[in-house]
Amino acid sequence: MNLDGFCCPNCHGPLAVDSDKLACKLCALGYPIEDGIPVLIPARAVRTEIPHD
Image (cartoon, rainbow, N blue to C red; front, side):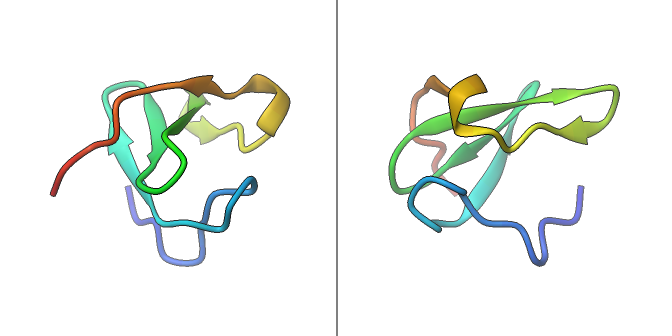
């Protein structure tokens, strides 16, 4: 998944693919990916481990 142009809507940090979600590297919120579409709505986010490069 190409993440150019995507950032965390909560803190504007960089996102990384983490299994079935996009995870923010700064605030550790995970946004679900549903039918291949990232759902970047803070109310739908869950706390997650910060992915490491």
